[in-house]
Image (cartoon, rainbow over all chains, first blue to last red; front, side, top):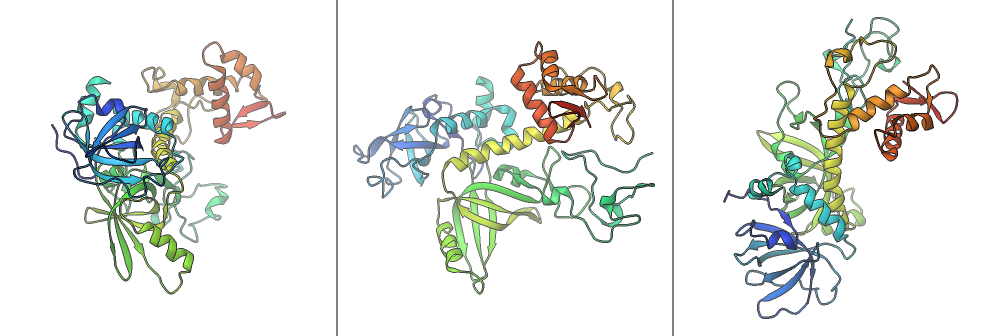
Length: 133
Length: 285
């Protein structure tokens, strides 16, 4: 797999992360936590397309004010494991009014090879994305 | 005769960036140039006054032009980059006594350095609090500033750094990047297809005459170029232009009505169409 550029990570939704195309890559997921309380060291995350992803909390903790603001949306930066789960590195707070539908459409546009010149590769996924698009 | 007018770019205006590059028309001339002879003061070019929505990837990959001033950076599609706006997250920052240096990323690739000068003597409480809100890692900020290139290293001198009011600004910004780029691309492809009134040979046009361009690009990315030609042609049917409804009736078999109306609105806003006998009748400028 191609080396990911520093600062470059593809923005994914639930179906993309489960596809297997992005295994072992650093990616971004935007959505909401399904629960403020982890189950062991994992927690469910509802992505922008309403798909669910498992987030592993080995490297980072849940945001501090998650329980106080359950409606808050977050951007998770982490590495995709072989089973499609995400090993969390960083959780960035977004806002509670973020429109997931529009965001989901936007990341489809980012994945379009026609607009690669603006969004870079975001990593090595564009070659495989081009093959499937 | 070549009056040296540059029709590239959206506005089709000349490049007024002063110095030795200015070439005044021989007669009458443009009053915009300050009346006969060379301009008395240097005019800022349109490019230098334009704020472009970009991504970090675009900024880090843009190139210096082969000629011109050293700070004139250029995108692959030919657009110049002077003032930029972007939305990115703070990866890290350095708080110095005279300035704050942000290292920012937006996922498109690369990390951009953003420098914000500090002036404690003139800053009010509100400005200090705003800066404090921005000076955190992993927070998304909207940055407006000037893009500079120092020995290949890109740097943004920030004019404004603000936290986002809503995360929808991230979505909006990325869509705006695509929108601006595609509009620029349409403008480039469309400018050569605009039929010039009264004559098929084009005076002062830097490209080849319209008649010799061959068939319309049917393999282009969108049908708007063909639509634009048809709309403009339809409005040249009569001396006093044509009514909007007539044009729609003429073209509705080939294009959707909404697309025709949008194109008419766009051309009106760009000054290509103007009202003649009433608001419903337009002519080609």
